[in-house]
Image (cartoon, rainbow, N blue to C red):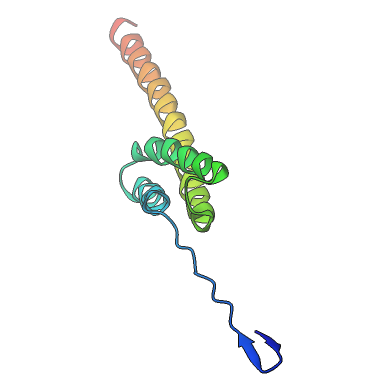
Length: 105
């Protein structure tokens, strides 16, 4: 507030809100964490896109933290899903090998 010779000037700023895309990224990340791991890939890709748009000024800066959080959750879940798939394949191959050894001696 600025006072000058009896006049008062009030400066009003508008609060910026996160975009719907940033919120969607976080929701996808949480859902991938709870029940549907493949959605982590979508959260990762959509989060990267949203952060790029924020950097270019196409999306509100207020959604940056939300988009980063959702993207990080998506990255972690995707990595864990890939590791679990690889481990599952190794176990499957070992079990087939043990079965063949037991069958054919």
